[in-house]
Length: 304
Image (tube, rainbow, N blue to C red; front, top):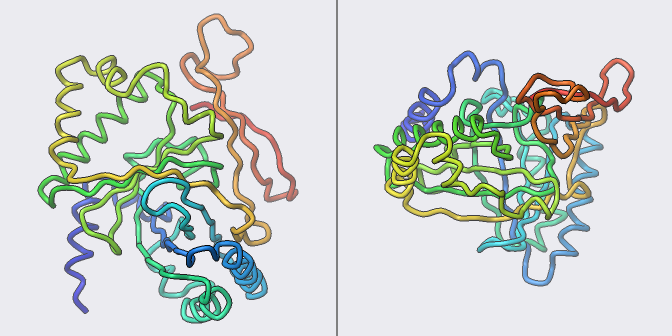
């Protein structure tokens, strides 16, 4: 079979952004669906989709399916349903037959749906800055999602280099931001990348005290900061900014696979603060996780 198109995108991105051993250790592939309900039929769609979730549960599906509702932008009112953390080979032997899954979806919710678009995306761990313990996208209440379409394949190395320098600047300045980077390998005009910025609540959407350009300048100096911004301007053909709201009531998590809940992150430990449990400059991040031995939700602290 011809795999030239996907191969060129995956090779050019993953070889630059994610070492092969890391790809094997992490499940980096996700499949997402954008569902547009018919005008005025969102309530009917949601009710029908809950029936579909119950079907997944009855089938004993071992994959997690999270749902977000898009609150801003051209896709306002649409839903994104996705399963994350997979290897490519997982889709050869899915937990539930994809054909049966699709058939049941359309039998229950299809009458309320105007269109469905599917994409395959790959998580770029080396470019991302997730909280410790989160190798991929987690069920944060809100996410600011930026989609970047680049000028062409030749712009990929320059764009990724600028993203890497931006990540280094964020870490150097302790800028308050987590990030999840993905490349869309199928389902849209390419090359295309997605940046997801998780938010604890609506208050987190307020601008940081230090602006993005000022943060870059503080970390790299004025000349290098301007060079990074110029690179983004030259390599990005167009970009979209959307707000995604997680819908736990429309999501499916297999029994025993409850996901980690990460709470708001505090400021880094300062010199002389004897009550801070982490090294100087590290953030003590309270997390809740599922203890696999006891089945209880327990609290913990990780230093980021």
